[in-house]
Image 1 (cartoon, rainbow, N blue to C red):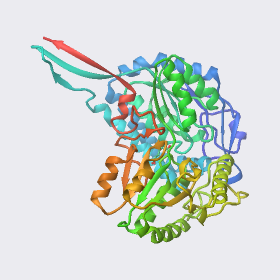
Image 2: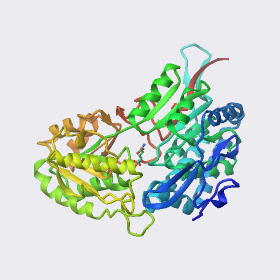
Image 3: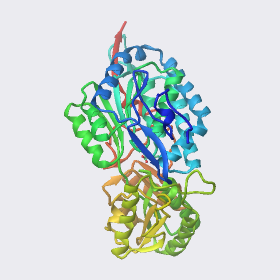
Image 4: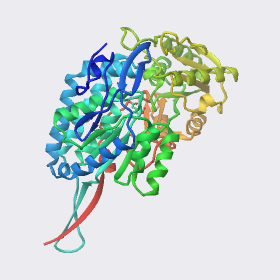
Length: 493
Ligand code: UN1
């Protein structure tokens, strides 16, 4: 099965799936060293990709360092026009890009198309910021003096991105870096090499100069580590697990380079007595089971007060039944495959452990069959204690634990009793409780009567506690702060 090939590799015609390539100094390079199987079709190859090493990282950074000053010297609207042209190319290629994304990641076609649209919108949003003001004019206490602030490119940024949004996350890190005049070296997740290559191809075809946008595929421990340790990298933005993120942070901090981390979550929703039980169940199901629960913003804990508990659980079980798992490319499938055997086994182990500790399985199974693909029906667990690992630890699957709490105060305390603080939700019709919740919850994103996952691209995103570096936010105009340094200019005339 061949849908797309990148460059014109001599060996690719013999291969049965698309081939991802490194993009280094404007050249498509690398062989088919790694094979990615489709998580929904265990016998189908989804992609081939090269495995880079220190040599590829060095070549990419060297070309980025050489090309960056000319890129930064271009007028910002000219850089923006290239990003906007790349958005158009990605949009034209939507059918291929979305299908490749489904085959390599497992999510549904509707979710993949949504992700392509998001990447397109991100490129257009940051492209249009080429025309926007990037500083202020301020008064000075000294007569005859004006103060202006500027934001300037910093050089070369390393981006390390996960498999769960393999197109949108590379886009929302690259676009603010590029519009600000930086060069980029992207290391995408090894499980999903095609989506990042589609982004690279759109940027390359739209006219991003050689060396300004580079992709090096390969293992995190090899490519990611080499990027983090290279002193020519001005900063590194990472989305992935908390363990890996904290390791990268210590490398970057040692040489005082800039670092932005988006890591784990254990996002909770508090459902109060006054909520509409059916609407709350839809909100929780979308947050917990959408994207197969494989989002760091996914809902995985629910605290519910006694008056609505029974009705909410019945509605949640009914809502879960509508998330039929299967091949994301098949019609009617609402729950895509789990990304890999490792993740599938972790999900199974988490559910089995919870059941062994006395958890009641209200929907789903502790023994799913993965012979025909990593399909995992949504799991609703009840009867667990507050400190059960299924209630406190990130699982990253379509699994939600429901715990009863006495009232709003107890619920808020339970939501905040976590090492993580990415997103948090409340379902209520009370202005008083929703306002109190938004003010007192320890999370970077708060959703009232809306799923914890799903973000608008024009507003800041990031978490607190172990979810994030708590410094620079992603997305929206705020994203530019990470990729630029500030300068304050006093002018006397
Ligand atoms: C979303 O909820 O739409 O990796 C995006 C993640 C987050 C992005 C979530 N950084 O899941």
